[in-house]
Image 1 (cartoon, rainbow, N blue to C red):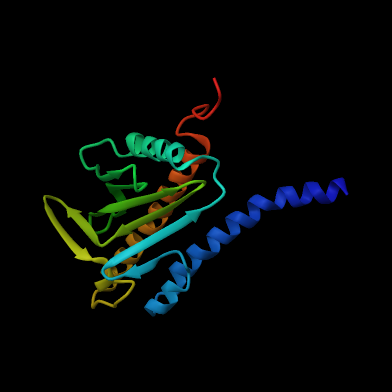
Image 2: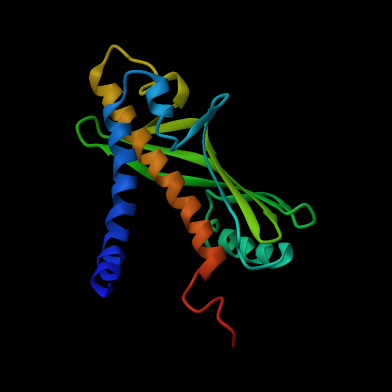
Length: 203
């Protein structure tokens, strides 16, 4: 019995990693149609926006207590010149910030760096929060000039005449989805464990 429990415990990380890896493999392999990409459930499309979201239930804390923890996340992670809190409504339990993914993907061959702004919204209620991260435009930085494009109008959602451009946009898109989920996971971790070790401990 003990061996069985130990084996189950050891397989949990493998299973979790496998699930995440499988989704990323689907993103890389199924690039023919928008439906295939949406099948991953890693993201949704809302108008021109790529959206990743998560509802987290059963969190210990009242609305006011969770508000303080979410505010702490924004204070620590949205504190540079490219980041700003756009809405901070404690009464309704909504905080919205604008952040910057500054180094999503770099194409060495073309010397292009892909970056973008994102909007992060957190809605707060007693014992639960909802996190929504959205992005509409991707910026391309090359040498001294800057260009941008609507993500939904380019690869992986459409095919361009230049294969290298397609693959750069696909790689940048995969990195974007990964970054959005990392942001969501960071909010969850901060609310549950604190932004730094011991932050939620009694003292």
